[in-house]
Image 1 (spheres, one colour):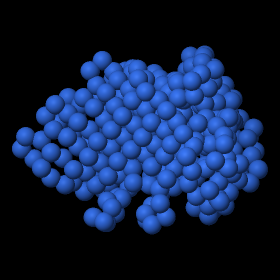
Image 2 (cartoon, one colour; image 1 turned 90 degrees about the vertical axis):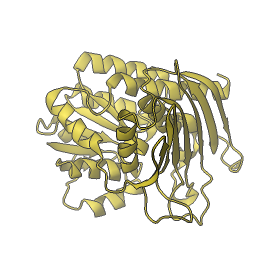
Image 3 (cartoon, helix red, strand yellow; image 1 turned 180 degrees about the vertical axis):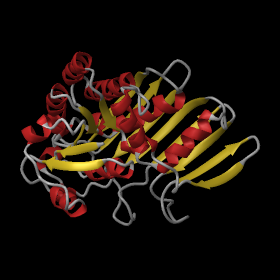
Length: 331
């Protein structure tokens, strides 16, 4: 299967592209508007992939899938153009930033029958979440009744473009990185929907960029499960990576903790999982676990199925994140 990359405005395009290549797909070309900072790194990683015009990619029938990581406020329109050209789409999160965009995307998916998949990388690109999914599905901790998702990020302000600091172009902290955690709540609790019960945002350390938010939190619940989410841009310089992301799953018969990216002053590497239930109290190294999202999306493109992630959930996650942002702002 051949795919193309559209937009280099976020470094997530690296992981999106590599995931598809590792699953057996071929990068057939790329297009970017202008020369955003991540473009240089993309070209270094994939020097054999040709630059192509957008129209050329969209008219190429040998490319059934495009990956999109342009500026967040432009992603919905580009995805709609691609779907109407007959392409399935994987888009970086946030896949869209307004309810109007969700409505337009829903209509185009219904009109064209195309796939619109948001790469929620904090689950899809983390081997530890693959193992956690297997454990939950096997009943290792009973029924999951609560998740706590912590998503701290490193700001790296000097490397960020102007759009990154304006909620009108990036969507706000809950619409953006909060969407990861909402998706994980629905996934691990088996919920189809949820209700936002608390949502707040703040700008506590970046007052010179008043349209930016550096802290956010969400509480939500489904019929028989609840969640707390905290996201921020406060990762300190001494941490060896971009953030100490953690996920806690509380079940009726046990618990799981994921230390996804780093075990502070502990074990080296990434993808640490701790399991406690009635018979087991153990650490599991998950670094070698597979990332099934990419191969599943390839199969969905080929077979017109929904094995990577249900289309309805993708839309609902985006809606809930946008709703949380509105509630936090009192809109």
